[in-house]
Length: 381
Image (cartoon, rainbow, N blue to C red; front, side, top):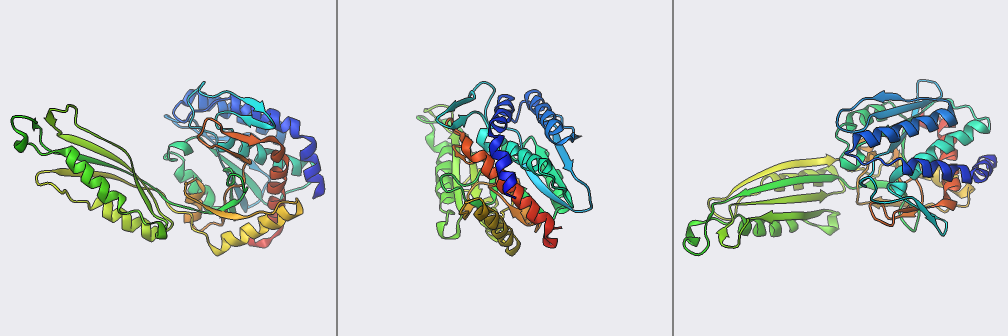
């Protein structure tokens, strides 16, 4: 297995070139044209390195999703990837400084895509033959909630012995992620009654006053001991200082560690009642990603990865994450899911988003070793 790392280390320059090509193929989630062009770049890379082409899942509003299958057999290991990014075209540019490569989506998660491709290429080039299929599922809408890809993710996960998610590991520690919080999104519309603020103030019902009271009520649902956070991230209402506000609106983010807490908070938010007589509240939304709960199977999967890491000189740790990923959907089905296997770096969704180029070969080798272990152990078939 040492040959795998040596091969990848020798190919570090080519790996970096692939990463540059993929990052320069910008893919904002809501720009279907650009995202599909990025998908074509991905197809070219898979054909070139592994000799396999994509099965397309056409979409109308977002980029087409793609599935690449390497090997044969009834069983499969799923590598979960997304190639859309949060950045508008031209917002960031690719550059290399001090051993770090910067660019839109380079950490989240184009670095992980390139690592996964080269991990399997290294196995192929060193003569390894898979006993079971390795399926790469590349989706195009993760950054906007995975609305069109969720069913496909769940279908593929349901056929898999294990799911490996190539999101980045925890910054600075490089820890893998064995649990993630759920993600809930809510929109609360508040309707009151307009009136002249000077002449007929008493005739009005202020939606803005109601909004302020509801914000306090919502933030009181945060419970750090339970791992629950409720955040009103956007709030606005009214249009003039001399008019009692008729309308206000809140955008709310909710994170919880388990389904029971998600349901409790959901019931509280959907059951909100007005503080002021005459106010009408409308609540929309719910849990968009279920929690990824650390299970016994996930713990065993992490231990297997940790053993592979030790062979490469990596002292891997595990961690929980507050953000969600497509791995949440797989884990919620009871499928062993390990996240954070992607590129090492910092700054996802930040202007300084970057990867550490010297870490690309070793993290690709980690994935390659893990794939071999999974294929030779009957537990994950």
